[in-house]
Image 1 (cartoon, rainbow over the protein chains, first blue to last red):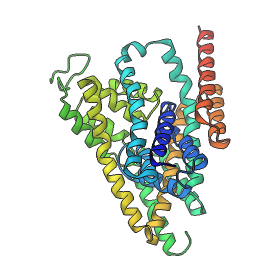
Image 2: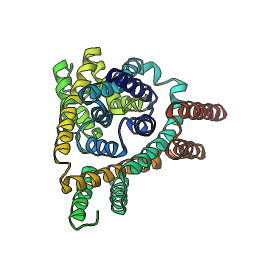
Image 3: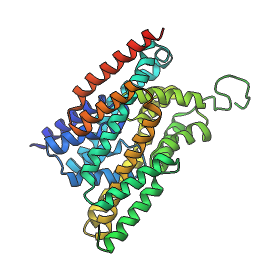
Image 4: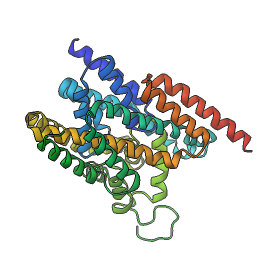
Amino acid sequence: MRNDDLLWAMALTFFTTAIFSFGGIATMIPEIHRQAVDIRGWLGNDDFATAFALSQIAPGPNILLMSMIGWRVAGWAGLAVATLATIVPTSLIALLAGRGEARIANTRWYMIAKRALPPIVVGLILSSGVVTGHAAIDHWLGVAIAGGVAIHIALSRTNPLIPLGIGTAIGIAAARLGFF
Amino acid sequence: MGSETAQEGQNRPAQVSRFQIFTGFLLIGMFGFGGIAAAMHHVMVERRRWLTNAEYASILGLGQVLPGANLVNMATMVGDRFQGAIGALLALIGLTFMPIVILVALAEFYDHFANMPDVVAGTRAAAAGAVGMIFGTGWKLARTIVDSRWAFAFAVASFVAIGILRLPLVGTLLVLASAAIAVGYWSSTRAK
């Protein structure tokens, strides 16, 4: 595939997925994985998992997973295309919606949508967990670390980087002891 | 500035400059380790007082219903509110610029040291932990959002369609969202 064709295909994929990503970036993850890994083979499961891990460790909005996938596939040009195709169209929608906020906020349809869509988003976020788990976890210790972090987040409000750091340290120690 | 009497915007700066928008979101982006939601609220409501808690909640609520990253949407709307489209652009650049630089540096670092067993094991473990973050967040949301049989049915339907059957997002969402809104409309007419 020529590089221009690749970048166009990426732009279209990220654009289409982003404008349907109601509820946030976690809902984009399964579709981007399906497109980029399963259908088009732009990157492998390993690269996807690494991009996912790095984007979660780094600070910043979780949209950066898309930037990182773009970077893995096509370097700086890929990063620019994936980031812009994800951010620009949705931000334009947000800009218009924000300007109409006073008018939108009290309409009946907004009230209905605000109650109707979140349960679907919950299903999409849990789907993201399954898809990323499938890509990133291949060992019982990984399952244990994921479970520990999940329980910590479900039960406490402290920064998730603390259990994430502990899990990482456990992984390194276990690998040195020869069982990870 | 200063008086607590007005209903809206007490204590907050009369105007937020373009430079302040840029630096505010730069700060949020750089210090949003482990998710920027907490940093966002801290900077905008507590530290710089651009928004009251109620305004913050209202903008966030709208950002959550729209497509795209909730907090990126929020940055757009806040930037636009104070400084128009230029403000929105500055908010977005401020929010993403440093994190992208840090992320690429991290990825270069990873590629450079990818043959070290500790780096490989650490990244594998961190990826597993990040999967746990998603499940934890999903579970937390589910507890507050899934409060009826219909809500449960739609959560399960979208999970099965996307997470298990791996159906395409666009078609699935068109079907499920229209069905959910139809049910919401139906129950809102019945409630009267």
